[in-house]
Every structure is written in structure tokens, then in C-alpha cells.
Length: 78
Image 1 (spheres, rainbow, N blue to C red):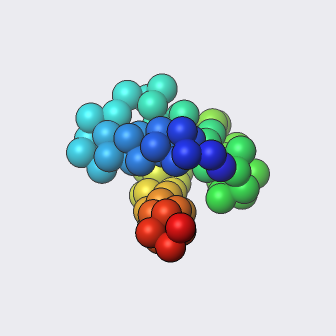
Image 2 (image 1 turned 90 degrees about the vertical axis):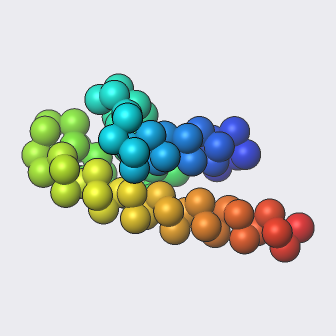
Image 3 (image 1 turned 45 degrees about the vertical axis):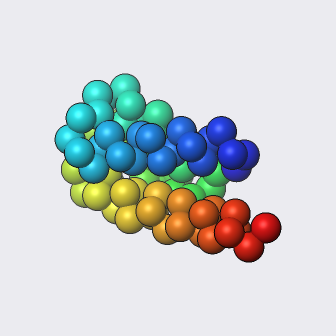
């Protein structure tokens, strides 16, 4: 993932955390995590087919937080 994608992930995560994200923004967040192999194909497909979307969003918020924390830590170490 490049810096722009990490920044986009952070912005989308913040919108979702604050209950301000549109469905399209949530989909972009899920898509970004899937494209970068942070969530499974099943999670991605379940989200797209409206299965357990709330549970998937909650799980991906945790995953996204970990991904972002690792990115920020790597930036600090550079």
C-alpha cells in the first residue's frame, strides 16, 4: 500500500468511526483492505452481498486500525 492509500484508509476509517460514512465510502474502505490482502475474499464477498455487514465493518475497523498503526510506526522508524 502506498502513502496515498494509507491516508485514504485513515480518512475512511475516521468517517466510519464517527458514523458519517456513506455506503459508498464504507464499500471503498472494505475494497481497499481487500485489495491489499488485509481481509479475506469471503469477508469481502459477504460484505458485497449484504451478509453480516455490521459485523464485517466492525471487524475491519479493528483490522484497519492495526494496519494504520503499523504504517505510522514504520513512518516513525524511517
